[in-house]
Length: 391
Ligand code: PLP
Image 1 (cartoon, protein in one colour):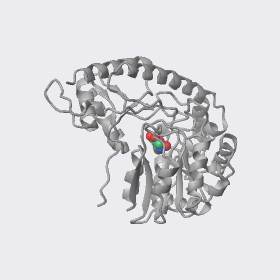
Image 2: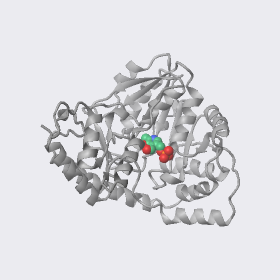
Image 3: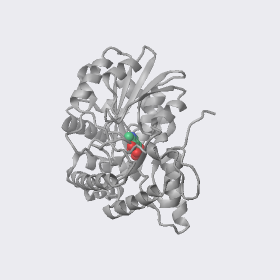
Image 4: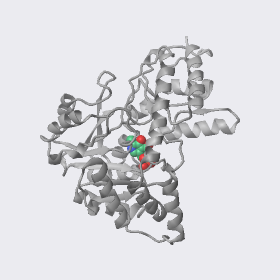
């Protein structure tokens, strides 16, 4: 049986729920989902789809008009030209990533992943029998891979490169110039596929989201991952998609046809409303995240020992906490690493966070600001007290 791990994010949410069931007031800063409701026009489209009896199996890759809507969105928001045959809609970006990795990675293939990365990347590569090759990025480079690092990491045996911009967990957003510089390196490796995970594209606080797929000479190498979960507050509806070279799209369709078939027909009809509709509710949500980000960055300044890069996208802060390693808790236990620290914060401060280990960055922890300002203030105040009690 292949060895791979349960997602750390889900594990922390589960532990938090268990403590809450015991009557303990847990502030949950571990989960990666907007705390907003799905916009009304999307909900209305779903209700209509139920009344119109969209109750049957759909094409595995999704309704044709949905895939057309994805193509329209890619043109409108990203200036990218795709045809519906290149789009495969799935039950979430997570499944889209699995489809892609299982389609292209064979046993022993090398997959380059800059750290920190989203928890699932490494595990799904291992599941496919691939070998993740991690490239450490630093707080100094804003947790972005440099062209020189990329050049050094790629080799003729590299099959796939996986990254997200905006990045979960660091909040790093690559600029057009930065992507152009990476694209020049990729040009020398025409056999490497590039997975560009753009699920947080709408949640950007400075500048604007740029896709590496805009560099035409890489078009046959790039697989865009996207979905509705984050930008439209639709995590439970389960819809993601890839935009890919035709051969990859066909392979993803074949795999999905055996695993799950298409995602829910009602969700697909609602997705058309989301993708073609007004982005105002999304932008309002982003404004709220922008204010919370400001609040959180101010609260963190007040906590000695936390070293934080400012996120320019997504809804997480990812402070370096290594200054607490080696310290003792009031009970006399030593905090050896980030895993110990998050368990201490959960059990003593009653705040749920996620260890950076899960994201390939053992000196950090991830805290989500997809929570009300009141909860953020409460959570960070409890964290401050708990960290202050470490000696
Ligand atoms: N990619 C990244 C970077 C994410 O953070 C997440 C969810 O946390 C996903 C993909 C998966 O999203 P979905 O809910 O569409 O499966």
